[in-house]
Length: 115
Image (cartoon, rainbow, N blue to C red; front, side, top):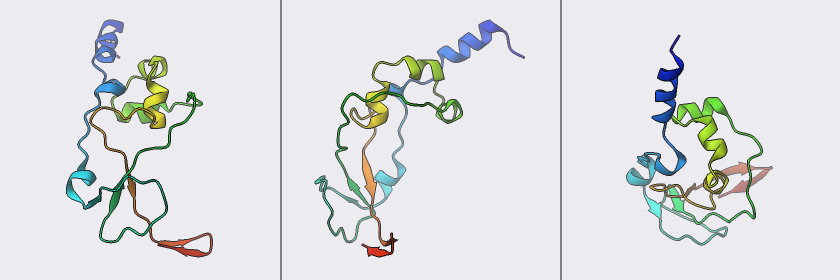
């Protein structure tokens, strides 16, 4: 068991949403379609497409997962109280260093071939 002082030190060393360290492995190693148009289209020869997320009006938290935040070394209370948190997690405001991408899909969906 750790002391309250040690716990406070660990919590203060946690990452915040605005300083997550993105490696962007997929973005840096696979072919990316540069067209950011948000429409259905055929994208041949690429694994991902850059996207500009459609903004949400007045995003807010409905739920937060403490175990998921801990996997990212994020402190639950910091994220919960971050005024920009809903903007970051909704995609309205990209987290610094991140690159919004969409995986290209091909297959059967709802009984119809898509792709």
